[in-house]
Length: 271
Image 1 (spheres, helix red, strand yellow):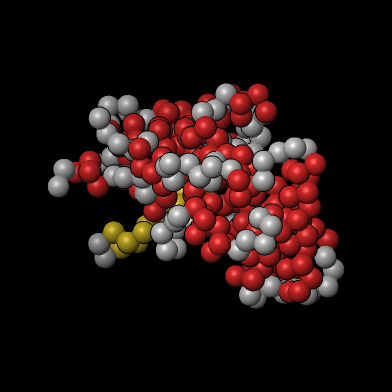
Image 2 (cartoon, one colour):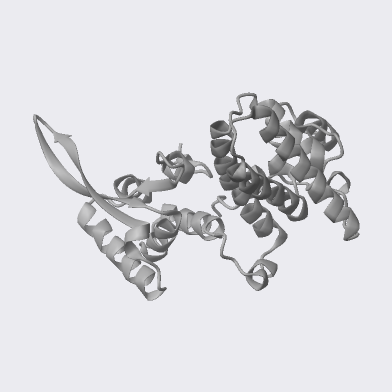
């Protein structure tokens, strides 16, 4: 198999780490290997350029390039080496400053350019995105939002997450569960329904997720029933709001011909 064929849409996700607070990060040494830099000194130069770009963009370098040392085994001895915990934005800056002649760098530029659409996007910036980019952006919001939602739900006593999740869907989709939505969309078994929504439908679910999280934070007692009821009520209220505004009900919105995974795969094709 051609060496470059090993690099697909999952390669950068496979080396992603999640810390104890649910934050994602990449280790510079691992990214160095993926991008094809054989020597750390050359990759360190790229990191330095990326840090300069970060600073010039008025971003805090330490927030995106967390330097730390770790011990590695070299033969029969051990030695400390420098590494970085990189944010997604830091990775984006690194691949933008890496050697463009390396084919894997080109993949990284495509990947991080699309994925580094953060919560601070203005309405004007969002409207400039294509529908596929809007979907990728909203899908990332649902992923990040669900991580926080489920984390707070555990604290509030939720154990039956199928019931908790379906409560939100049932409120928003007029009684439909996740399985009902999947069947209506004609999805395969265990295919992710959020990967098969357009940007408008994803937007409604982002609102459901973030508003439920905000209300659960205010919930004082540890009650699975109350948390589940809250999720349902939020979904129901969002549905009422859509109806009042004359919007399209989420179950009436069309299912895109391509899933999120197919869009990501297309962005990693090498021509």
